[in-house]
Length: 256
Ligand SMILES: [Zn+2]
Image (tube, rainbow, N blue to C red; front, side):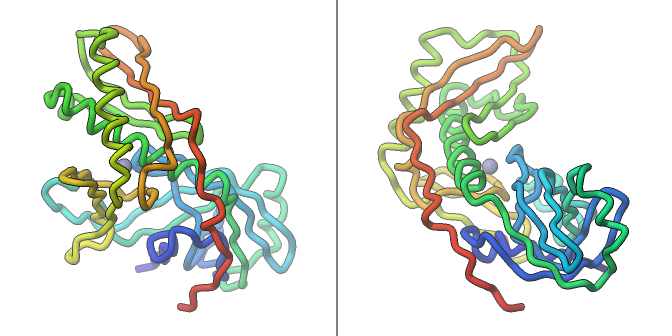
C-alpha cells in the first residue's frame, strides 16, 4: 500500500525536503514524503510550494487520505499510514499536465505560518484543559475545534451559556498552567505510530498536531465565548502577546 512519509513527525522544525511524486490527481499532487502538515485534529494545513523540474506549484491546502484504522481506546478514528495530498492553487493547475509520477521535487512550507499554528495548537490545549477542569461533562459534548494562526476555538453542545465568572475562571486556570512553563511531551504508541499524545504535567490529551516544547511563548491567553446558535457554545482563545519561535525552523535534509 502507498504511504506518504510524515517528516513533520520526525522533525517538526523541518521546512524543506526532497521527495518524489507518487501520484497525480486533477487538482493535487501526492508525494512519497513531505514536511507539510495536513489539516487534522482542528489544526489548519500548512501552506507552501513544490519546486518541480517544470515549474513551481503553490499549495494552501494539504489533506491526509486513507490509512488503516488503529482501533485503540482513547484514540477514536486514528489511522496509521495513508497518503498526503497537496492541493494545488488554481493558477498553477496547468503545470500538472507536465508532471510525471516518479519526478523529483522539493517541498517547502511557510515556516512562520507553521510556527503560529503550532503555538495556537498548544494554546488550545490549555483552553481545553481549563474548560474540562471547569466542567468535565463538556468532554463528551465537544463537537469541534478549529486551530488558526491567531486564535483557536472549541464548540460544545450546551444549553447553558458560559457566564463572565466561568470565563474568568477558565482563563485564569489556562494561564496558570501556561505560566508553569513545564516541558510539553509529545509521543506515540508503539503499536500505532499515528496514535499520538500530548502530555503536560499530569495532563494527557490524544493529539497528532504540532506543539511547542514549552508554553511560555504563548504569553497571556484571553478567553471569550460566542453565541453560535441554540444549544451550542463556542469558546475562543487569543494570545496577543505570543512570540512564535520561527527561528527554530530549518531546511536541514533528512535522508530516507
Ligand atoms: Zn491537539
